[in-house]
Length: 174
Image (cartoon, rainbow, N blue to C red):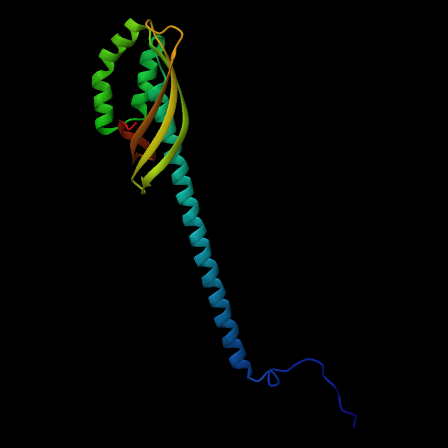
């Protein structure tokens, strides 16, 4: 009788039995699935951190812009913008000074046009952040009708409240 040739490999020729091969495939599948889940979780975590970082920087930039852009003709609106992004002691202090500041900027016809140049996070976690902001403004008033350039280096402390980053403290640092 002529021998039949088979070009496929059998489990026996691979050096094991079918049960060992099945267990090996299950283990490999489980390890691959676990690695894929771990990588997915790491990517998600990194995405969340990146989004939080962008939210913090955006809130700090807006707060600094509001703080450095005030116009005596619209001071009620401008000060309301500052207060909308504020909380805690900063909000209390700014609110307490609003009446005096309104009178002062009106008397001097003060206009400050702010521009945020750069911002960087010093530290942050899920609930708080510290951001350094560099901003320029052109300030005009009765004493300087052509305007005067000013540069601000601000340290803003922010807290996360009700889904928003709010400024809780502002310090001039340079």
